[in-house]
Length: 529
Image (cartoon, rainbow, N blue to C red; front, top):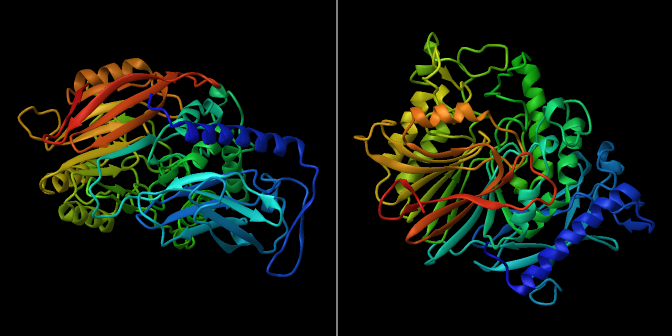
């Protein structure tokens, strides 16, 4: 395990202690009253620590980064326990955790219509530089977070380190993986979806959500608060900048576009989606410009890491065509036969505008590595060994024409190596991506790494065994453990360590390396290390 230097280790240890202390403060209350000025001129008296949900940073650019917190002394109460008034918050950013070198400060208004969340995009920063940050409201000082900017776009870069993570169902395990992620020496965390779960499964509960499935804004805010109160998740956010996209459970399982698998009308579902998108924005370190407009929010984006790597984060929910052959109900994997709409040429997971944006970006990129961060497993998972054959309608198998277009765009992109990075399926996967899947005569156009879930349970082992038997391009697949994928990318190779612990993830359990795979810079495709 790559460890931190002593000063960074001391800082990360402090983060863990501080996160735990904040969680206890939320349970037992804080004695000292604190007052914060508001632009309205009305004072606010604090009876509890306003930073119960921690701090975070995200969207690292060569000269900017986004800082986040949310004022919520009672995070499960309406409005976080605050009056519906604006509150002025001071932010501080410096080169050291004592805030003595290169200090910059500013003020931002935390508004009730955004749940008193704070999104500060600090610019004019030095590239490839670590910074520390915190917030003040009166004499209430937040925990200290650490972030870093990306290298300059034209800089020669030797290494990029990423933690790839997804699927953190609160009820189904503990955030042991986040505890290790917080202690890692990383450039950023790439989270590819299912940050919260709107659903529950009583058979798999180790701890419980705060209420029934959310439908409106207050309920989605409460669900995010439950997740954000976890000290290990807080520590991972405070230790590293995050780059994020979403999948389905941030709104509703298996939704596509304006279609609800639970049978809501499009109009009713878009109301639910608007509430979910707003709560997502309010609780994550994304730029102020990304604030949703009703049920629309652009989350797909592009990042560069010097001359080494370019990353596209993709939205495979908001613009996708609805599931084929499963109207009005949330489908289980269904029969492959008798479902003609699956093969329709126009069906898309990203929408044609996003597809074109990605294709143009891949074709224009000159960087050594091109990374696609999206919600699921691209390589085929059809189970032909059952009668009739079975298909996951919600996965890429349910959108074969869209997958063909994606692989064609990758194949046309020219020199350089493409890695597809995914989550969603609750298993670790290393796979080859060919123009024609599982045909050894077809060229490999990309490698694929899919991370297992932080906590969410997986399918039974026999299904994975059949998948491996049917699809020789999948060189590794295991769903019996929880964790994340540690990626280290340099000019010669991209290596992936699947870091895992037995399922369900126990509080404080150790993680080990389940398997290690790599892709060489001079040829596509994965191989064991």
